[in-house]
Image (cartoon, rainbow, N blue to C red; front, side, top):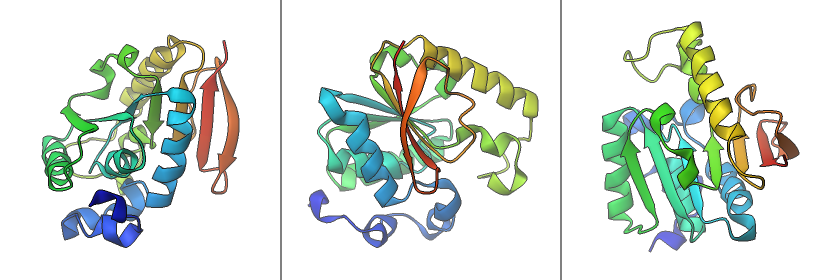
Length: 192
């Protein structure tokens, strides 16, 4: 049963070795995911979007830790298939994965968001998952502005958790409520 899968090692064992090797840089640690989902679903929030869900690790841990509807959007089709496969193995019913560019997703369907430094691979060759993404500072800046506007258009009370990164995509209409893990994990809420 999924609720027994609580340790980092147990979660990691579900993934192929190639994916596990990327874990320290690209996938959310289990303890971070648990902290994030607790905040994102607090107060009856029921729909969480993981922007750039990668291997689906955050979504899988989040769905095991809450009753909320967890959705991961990922541009790499192979990672979407892997995420769906693991969710099926674990018989998770409150998680789904969509293959799409996160810029094209309707944010109005969600009341909380998880964002793990998605655009870093556009400027840092060490953070590239594969050869499909080319380094491009202009595209990164454009993507940040699109996401920032989508967040700004959300209603008061919308929550975001960011993990790592500079948080350039967070508009001034959000307030930082707290941070943990040496400032790498930040909890935001829209106040105006």
